[in-house]
Image (cartoon, rainbow, N blue to C red; front, side, top):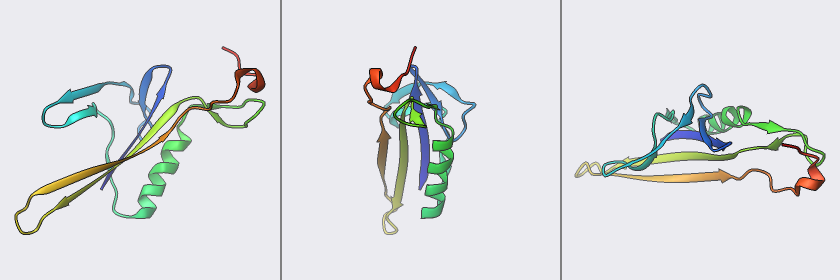
Length: 116
């Protein structure tokens, strides 16, 4: 299994598992389909490692405090878990992806006290 974690903030895609990678590009080709170029994909072997990746990525998200929430997310985030299996008889491979998406806060701007 592999995990990736990105955020979309101010119209830029940033890698939350390696926050130095920002302004990543969405690409498409016939072999991979639609993908995010140069995104970090960490190999995970257990539930604990998946949770560790979630925690690491969440800690790197763009947040700020508002009158309604101490840590309101300013970005959309997408956690991607890729599961691959290989048939031992004919060695064909199948892959599936699970996308967990968290959209930026939808509080009414007037109630949050946010500016800008």
